[in-house]
Length: 64
Image (cartoon, helix red, strand yellow):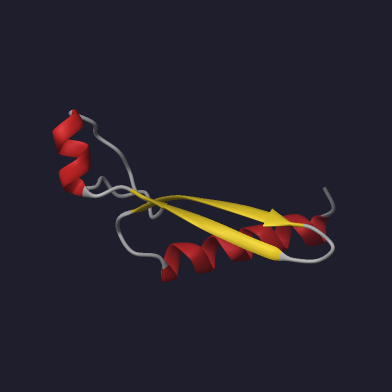
């Protein structure tokens, strides 16, 4: 990828980390000539505890 694309993706990552809640664990982005969409994957502390899973959020913090 070009330096401009890498820079833009890094900036987008920084913004997502700032803006998303502490239960967001992943973001999928879809882009074509006509549209752009994104989906945020959410995992709550309760759902993780029920399954015995330990996971970090998009900010890098463990979900408690």
